Length: 107
Image 1 (cartoon, rainbow, N blue to C red):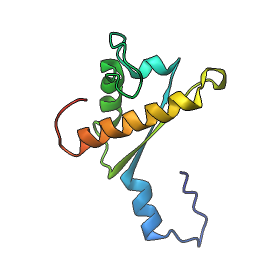
Image 2: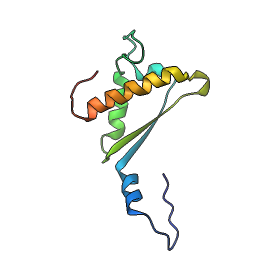
Image 3: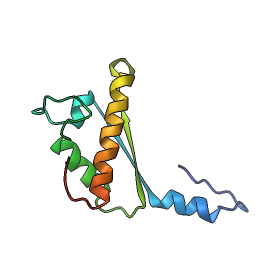
Image 4: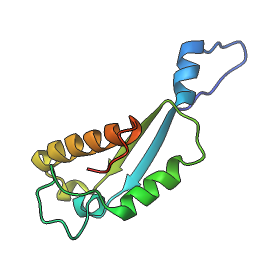
């Protein structure tokens, strides 16, 4: 979100706070497999999250102060599958909630 201020313009303090409290991260994927372990044969809804993906995610948010993380995954349109994406989104949300809510275990 770009905040371009011109002389005399005002910023809503609530919007300014929200803009600072969300860490936006964008990853470009070759395919959905980039998110998951190569050694786990299960479907995306149960598959183990890739250590490489987790390392990059941690590196991306390590030094930032934030209230929330907005993760955007970019994939070539010809490789997208909406049904798989629904399962992947659900899996990643569950994983991140467990991670950030202090359950301290990887699913």
